[in-house]
Image (cartoon, rainbow, N blue to C red):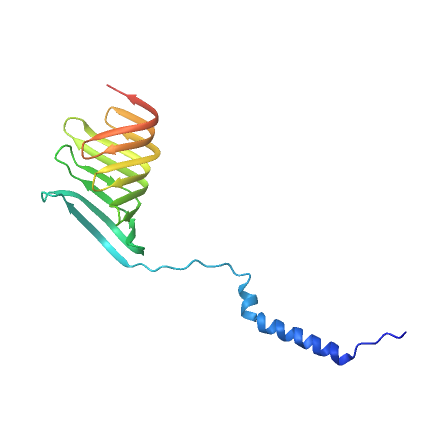
Length: 191
C-alpha cells in the first residue's frame, strides 16, 4: 500500500493560518509589555501647603494645641485625607501641666481620627519651674490630638537634669502630665 504525500499547498495554508492566529492574539506591544514590571498607580496630591499652622481650640475657646509643618501634602483616601508632614511641630497646652513641645523630621496626619504620627528623630520636651526640663527621644510617636495622648512601642530615652532613663514603649497623657514606661526600663539618677 502506498502512503499519500501531503500536498505542498496544504502545508503552506496551515502555516499561514497559524501565523495569522498568532498575529491576531499577540501584538508586538503585548510581547514588549509582558516582561515590563507593573507600575503602581500614581496618585496626585489633593492639597499642597508650605508653612502650615493649624490651631485647635477646646469647648471653652481656649487654645488646645497647634500643629506646624514646613510642608504638608494631602492625599485623598476614601472618606478623608491623609497628609505627609515635613518638619512637624506640635504644641500642647493644658491648664493642669506645663506645655509640651513635640518635633520630628517627618510625620503623617489623618483627618478622619485626629491622629498625628511623628517619625524620625522625635523629640518631646516640657519645662517646669519645679522639675526643670524633661526631654523624650524616640523614633516614632503616635498622638491623639483631641485627648493629648501619645504612645509608642519603640525604644525611648527620657532625660532630665538629674536622670537618664531608657525603656521600650511609652504611654503619655500630656494633658495630665503622666507617663508610663512599658518595658526594659533602665535608669540612672544623680541627686
